[in-house]
Image (tube, rainbow over all chains, first blue to last red; front, side, top):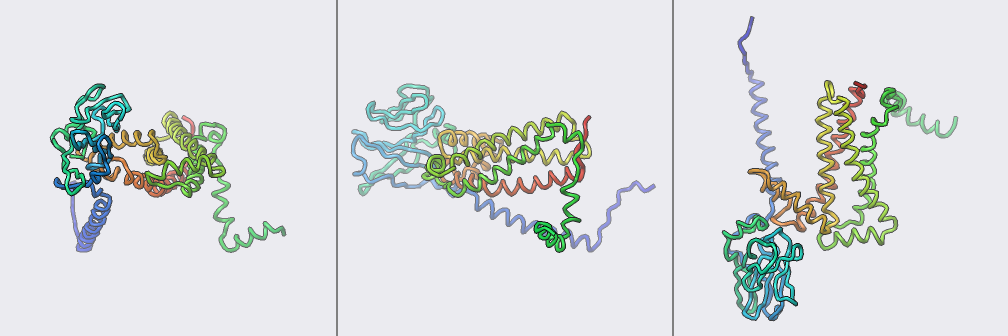
Length: 164
Length: 220
């Protein structure tokens, strides 16, 4: 009765295992390149991105300009008090709110959420929290988006996942 | 000798058609499988697959996978291309029917106990085929780029993103960014017309080969 577990290794077997490891190494390299290729470029993003939204004279007082900020829909408003920019993804269920000219507010069509165009605060409707503000700067006649005014707040809104 | 016999003989002399093809074509199916329509469900699913391949190839000739053009090109297929609405409707309904047929086929296999030894691996391949079929449906759903497509994909990729630990990476690779856009479209298009068809073709071959080797299981 031979009930010991025996383990033998030959030189040939060892060579085969080593060859296998080399093959795995190259396969790993190929897999890593594929993942690297598939990885979206926008995922690696610095903090100091300065995005030109529009020339200031293209957006006269009372008009708006839609743009993308960190992969999310955003809106630049030219209010009488100056330029404002907000992420326009509604904090309620993630629809895109838009500038409703006749009521002078940002309006989400899905569940009639209304936001203050000066502060982003909720005026009425189901949204639980305000639209996140974006810091902007006007220089050399153009408007640039800089960063979220409050990145910690943006991180708490699920519809802005990955944007802050 | 008639012309068709001559042609057949020409090929037979060179490729041994009689010897190789006869056992495949003339292979008899068992009586219980021929007389019971429940045994047709897998075949119906495969027929749907063939229709989907055919109509899909034709749709790909007019369809443009970019956010600006996708909806317009689908509209163009439906309204302007002669027989376009027929082709797309066939694609649409064959897709729906295929999912239904695959589900019913699985239920037949389950309730008749046809998954038992020696057919365990064929069951595993079958479940994988079911998953691939639904993935086909999910990836194809985005391509018309209408409201339904957009939000369904938002929800679907959101579910993928909710998997613990690796979810957000899966979602990033699937969506090609943080929000659904042009990158998502081309990715889903590539998945729908390149990756999945190759995968399903290989698995279908395996599935059929195993049925052939093991035979169709009898009644309980």
